[in-house]
Length: 46
Picture 1: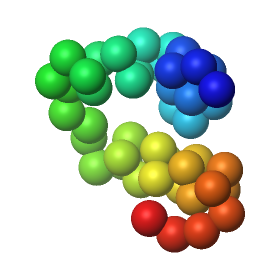
Picture 2: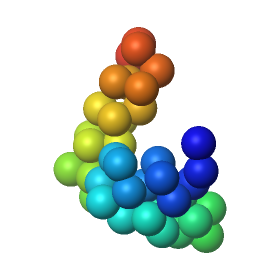
Picture 3: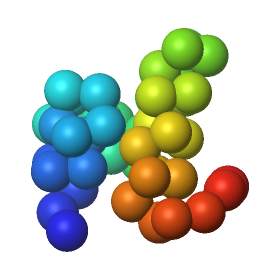
Picture 4: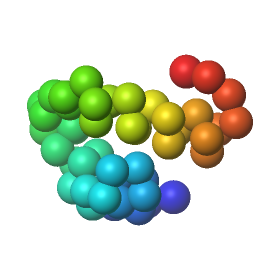
């Protein structure tokens, strides 16, 4: 799965992964949304 797809599906931000790699920090609400998305995709808890 591409980085842009992950960001778009998780929080509607296709640059999310690239920005995180560049040092972006997430707000708590955004972090919760990303974690919930990953848990749903991976079928477990982080």
